[in-house]
Length: 190
Image (cartoon, rainbow, N blue to C red; front, side, top):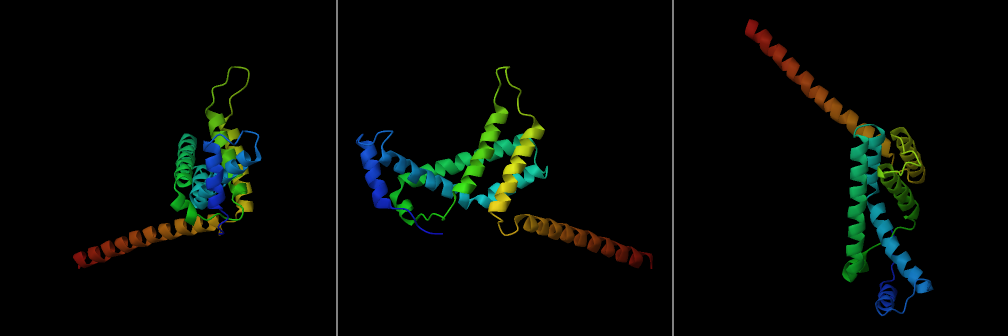
């Protein structure tokens, strides 16, 4: 992680925006937007583990499609609110660090978010609504790109290891109880 934020320049750009000295086509306006979006991108990137997990749960059919879409959009909304709060708090911004390249992750998350919105759109009759299988395929495609770009410390292996570990612990506790019951019954018979 590196701190690429230039807080003093950001404050200058905000003053120019407030005074109306920045127009929509001004280079400073795009610089201000870029700074604001980089903070939001970093927030998404910081929570990539949770995005990966949620997408994985949907693709593994652990959670139903409507729940995935709802949770995904809620998480993205929360992250956007957090970015807005950070952008308004100069003390927070002063210690806020940016990764070298969170844009690719953010772009793929934005693609999934757009798919969630498009799935819920009501069409005017001229176009067919996206099917669930098409939605699944497109989310899976984004997920594969995310996995390739961000191997994320063998995320799937870790999920699998946790599942196996918890299953093994449950099995051992069940076997242990069965053995105790058998021993108890043997002693009761004797």
